[in-house]
Structures are given as structure tokens and as C-alpha cells.
Image (cartoon, rainbow over all chains, first blue to last red; front, side, top):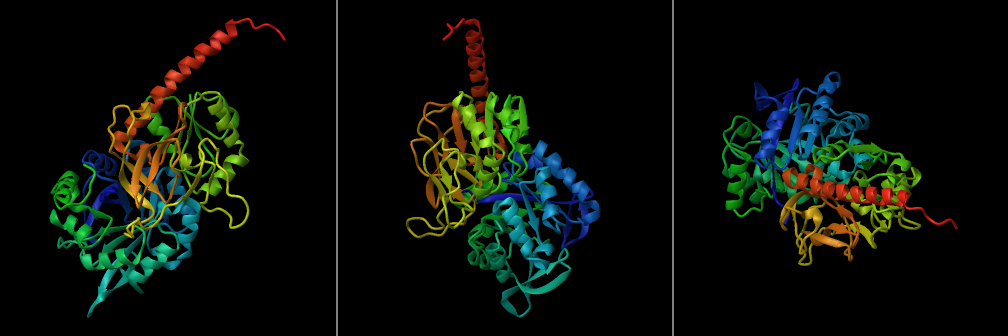
Length: 254
Length: 233
């Protein structure tokens, strides 16, 4: 039986791991490769390196990181942030990344998803969606881009559907309302997206306690759960998280 | 020397490094002559069946790989590389005309996985993540591993049942996740051993052990052949 995945997310800036609270107030949490290797030992199912400052000028550092990771890690990893074109994606995949995640660029140019899926296979293309609730409407979320700074007004569930139709292999769904809050995943948002698409959905944003992970799977109907700070600062280990998920009846690899 | 076949469709670093980590001498190459002369051939998995099959054909690598297999070289197909061992595949196949052809080492056609099981329950495709592989009979590839071990999968297409099936996995349907051409050191796995942590490393090491033993035997046989004075026709 396919197990539910636990994915530590490593926000990377200048080759170091950082994690923002609501996308501001960055704290340094270590070397990305060292951290990823520790997560492999804790039975993490994959890791995501999110290049949070990625602009065209500092892609080289991240490409180097991807190449280093492919030599050092024996688990799948995804690199996200700053991709503008198929050529950018090709460079990262050639360096060894198993998957890339695209966000703002895919919103600006949805055809990027189709082109990238054709070139590298759907399994290599994650579409990351940063979604925020629309005040007064409990069933509507809008897509934010540019690191969560700009509201596009696009309906998040509709956008997930289109991304899947265009060949996205997975949706990485972050609740902007919950990110950094430690209140748990936005299970209503996650479930709405998970039911709208027939590709896997990774829930992200808001984990603070052990039981939040199982909630994301059971209430949110996610296929994978992602967290950063709780892992980086050693509050929880991946193994602890998986044991609690198993206790809740969720199939995991331990 | 293990040759990892480079058919120009993507990154082969992880496979190369995984095999090297298992103690093998490895070269990544798109040279059919090198593939033909290899001690063992690894066909990795990147892209879609139709594109990969076309590249293999164009570069002369498909024929080189089957020649190496015919000469007794161990073979390991990974993910799409396993799919390419079959007769054909429907992934990205043109709407008209014959199906893109694989190497034909195993009979049957690779097809899209269903999105529902027999009871009508929905499943997410691609099948992404860690799933268990079950086997009934011991095989050198599974040495030191137990049936039910988890490996990392990422695919939407799956191989058909055949006499070559040695391991199975379930996601919407039960499909062959490991195959072996009966009686030959020719394997294919649907999962990615190079991405499957310790269990994957063990499987690659098992393959390398088979390669070493086969290379030793073939080396000895070649020496004997040179020493034997054959009568002229």
C-alpha cells in the first residue's frame, strides 16, 4: 500500500537553511545537505529545497546545491523557487534534482507547466500554490505570488485543477493564513483542493504539534504533509511524526 | 565495467552515484560500442516511453543493449528503463500507426494505470511515494531484503503481468514492480533504487555482486576460448 509521505521543507537562502514566520523574520537553521541527510536517517520520504531568494542572479548557488545533493542523498528531492523557463528547469534537473516546483512563473505563464511536463515528465513538475482565504467567504481561497506578497485574485481550487490538467505531477499547497501560525494545516482548503484534482496534494503551512500531521492526512485528505521549523529546530523528529501517524491508522514507512 | 545507458533524456547522476556507492566501476555513455562490450548494462528511467524508445533507436543504443544481454551481460532497467524492456508502450504513443516498440526482452505492452480500483475507489496518479514490493520467491536481487520492503516510486504507467514478474506492488491495481527474464541475469524494477535509501542501496549492491560474478565467469570463459585451438573449417 502506498504510504503517506512526510516531507521536511528546507527554505534555502545563500546556501543556508532558513525559515520565515509568515514569510518574514528569517532565522538560520543550518547546512541544507547535513540537515537533509539527518532527515533521511529519520526516515523522511523526500525533502524539498525551496530557494526563497531565487532570482536569476543567484541561481548558480542553487544549481550547485542540487548537484551536491544528488551526490550526497539517497532519497528524492525537489528544488523550488525562481524558475522562469523550461531552460531554468532543465538546468536544475540536469544538476540532479528529481523534481522542481514552480509557482509565480506558472501563474504568469501556465503554458510553462505543459512545456515542462512534456520535456521532463509530469512526475518532475510540482506546482506550488500559496493560497489565502477570502474574508467573508469560507469556501474561497485566492492564489498569491511573489513569495506571498501579491494577490492574483485567481481561485486556488480552480488553479489547482488547471495545473493538473496541464500536466503537473503534484500540487504543493501552502495556506498563507496558517503558515508560521502553529495552528495546524488549513484542512478545509487542503481537502477542497485534494478533492478537485486526481494528482497527489502535499499539505503545507501551520504545523505546530504532532497531531497536526495526521489531521492533514485524515481531515485534509492530503497525500503528503510538509513542515519546516518543527523539524529544523529539533522540536519533533520525522520518526516521531510517522509513529504518531501510524498510531492514527495512516500507512507510513518506518 | 557497468555502462549506464545515456539516451539524452535527462540526469543520470543519481543512478551512476548509486552504483558507484555499491562499489561498481561505472561509466555513463551513449556509445553503442561501449554498451555492447559492457560487463553489465543499466537502463535508467527518464521521460516518456515513446520519446525514450525513439532516442534508443536513433542512437543505436537499443540494439547495443540487447546484443550485450544476448552475450550474457547482466542488465537492470529502472522505472522507464523497465518499461522499455517490454514489447511496447502506450505513453505518448501517436494516435495512428504502430505502438512505439521497446527492446522486447519481456512480452506485453506497458499501459496507463487505472485511477480507480475494482471497487470503484479513487486513486491518485501519478503513483508517487514509498510503496511496498512483495515477492514469493528468493532472488539474488532481493538478497538481504524482506518481501514487503518499501521503495520509492514515481510513475503513471505500469508493466503488464507476464512470466517475468518476480515482485508486485498495489496501487489501484496490483502490478509487476520487479521483473526478471526467466533464467537470465536480466532485471527490471519499477521503483528507483537509487532514491530508496538503505533498501535501494542494498538492491544495487546485490546487482553489482551479480555483475562481478558474471564478469568473472565471462573473463574465465574468454581466457579458455583463447587457449583452445579451434579446428579450422
